Length: 91
Image (tube, rainbow, N blue to C red; front, side):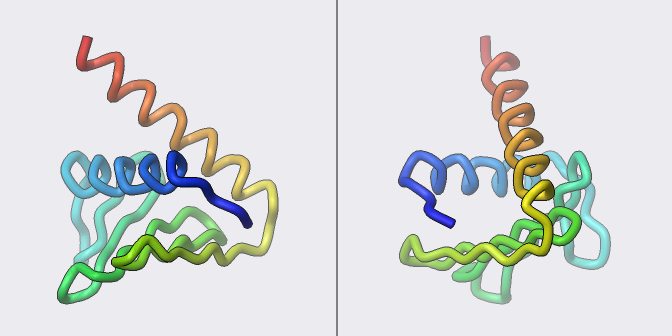
């Protein structure tokens, strides 16, 4: 899956939103059914939703692992909603 700089920035924004506004259970944050976690030093971060796992690495590298394309579409929709809601709260 191709991901541009804007999309990477959006994923990092969502990661930050989930880790600041989400509920933490067993070291994993969750908000709107999207889970976020990171390793001990923070260099690797994960976003998880159903069968989708996105790995975000320190130097802007990433990987998507999923079974169903519809999960990716649903995730993208949720991300758009979360970021839109965040922007609207700033106004």
